[in-house]
Amino acid sequence: ILNVEQSPQSLHVQEGDSTNFTCSFPSSNFYALHWYRWETAKSPEALFVMTLNGDEKKKGRISATLNTKEGYSYLYIKGSQPEDSATYLCAPQRDSSYKLIFGSGTRLLVRP
Amino acid sequence: NAGVMQNPRHLVRRRGQEARLRCSPMKGHSHVYWYRQLPEEGLKFMVYLQKENIIDESGMPKERFSAEFPKEGPSILRIQQVVRGDSAAYFCASSPVAQGYTFGSGTRLTVV
Image (cartoon, rainbow over all chains, first blue to last red; front, side):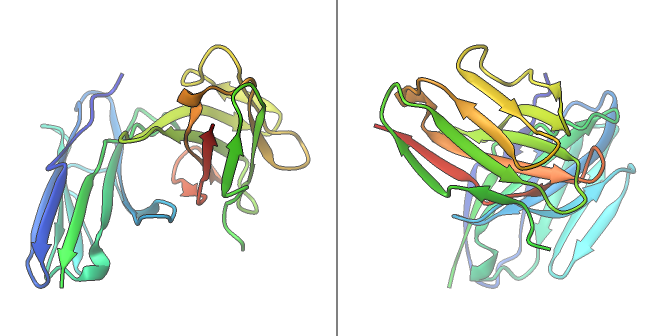
């Protein structure tokens, strides 16, 4: 069973602040790491899929890095906006298994 | 492309009744996954299906729960004789290959 940990559990920031959170996972048999953004009452939306050690992906003000050797990924949000408020989930994928094991998420609230 | 469609959005059942949750995958997607989110918990894998086949049901409770994905029509998650502990949000996701999920909006089951 994969042990996926995300920290912090929740985060409150002011509009304009930059923030980051962590996903840690077992590094053995790593295949890919998925990040999802989940707004309340909506469905989780795919942000990034990362596969290579040292990979860095960017989408607007959101970026992510990956360290497969030590088993962690960081998600960064630059200049947070209220519409960034959501739960951010990471899910490592082992070997080429279809099964995504989700962390409990980081709940971000951006105050105007 | 309508995305992954789940219905109903909300379902209320009395203890002992049956609950049937439907999921229509995105067009062209032949892989379907069901996840459950219990109150205050993350997304937990339940079952993975391809057309007419259950590939992995390791996350399904052994009793009362079943899933199918027939050749024609939506995938169905069926819960017989529901109990209060079955109250949760049930999410379906689909993919064209065994990775890269697209999620539906979920069915929120309340057992009274």
